[in-house]
Image (cartoon, rainbow, N blue to C red; front, side):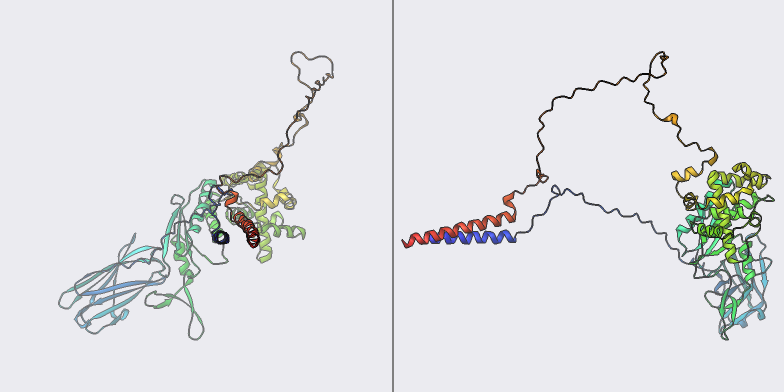
Length: 533
């Protein structure tokens, strides 16, 4: 008997140990009542392939010509090289020619003299020649120049080299994009983000839509690593010099900043640089806005403040910071009069900032009165010969002299804060739509006639009694109460589709084992006492 009891104790103890070591059952999908949150990955934009520096085309060689190259020392000069396999003593130097052929220009043939060249080599000949770009006939930017060397030896053999180059700033790898159906050309350094280029296309598209014009606009954007035009560097004695440098050889010549600006301008490009503190989109919006509206406003009466405010309106950046500037100027009585706003902004930086904030605010107030479309329509109408004062009076039904006092009172309202935070490029919202409705025609206040009346409707002919009697409907007799069973209190909700029972949980199993051990202990005690008897 004792042996059996001992075996039972060993078996139960082993079962208890196995139950405690068993892993916690995994909750299946059916037991989980909380849905799993799937993380949605933000779609990544396919990166634009970064172009490499375009390879220099291999020259075409004939006779004893060995090699040749050319490099642009933008914008002042081009350095040409020509290598031959025969020594200088074998050559007829009077026959040396360098021919330049540019599009839309007559070929230029240069008969070079030895004192114009750098000659080197032993057993072979190497010529170097620096061609100064002419002030009155320089090639436009990105023009291809086909060039050729030619020379005869004393024995009559001829050496010929032909190749080409692109006249541009070689310090930058340029990427040219056409936006807005070809109306906008953006030539930018490859370090400039593609999103900036697309944003400039949006500005052009809005200007084309609102003005009805479509001029050709060409922008050139440098990155912060390279400044446009000439290079300024220090000499050994600490003085600054302005030079144009060859990218490969490092040779330098004197550079004229005004000539560089003329090369950009006469090539049709507006140049800007992307710096950390520069608003390139705002600068580009101002350039494009002038390209659209200046031909339209030729000879028209357009106040300076309206043109400046319209430029800021087309700029995509938020300009909420201009509201505090206008508010402070209004509180301290430093706002400009209408006559002062018609003149150019002052030279003082602080006063000029107030002038710009006021010009933008006055245009925003016009947006509040007549909506964006109304302001665009007024801007287009100024090219028809009508004065601004007449156009404004038709637009707002108020004289233009009341503009500044009305705007000054409006900027202190809560409404002004929201209007100062809008741009023409954001999606339309209910607030923006409401601002496009002229204030004098708003009829949104409800009238008492719209309130439902308690007077019952009568079909047929009305009774002459002025006050109809309202018959109160009979009060329904309440039905006898029914015995409604109370809902069970704290009724546990069974787990959804759970396959585990109470006895299968580790805690319940451990409790049963403890109870069994106690019962076995009692049986052992009773058995031992009976055995003594």
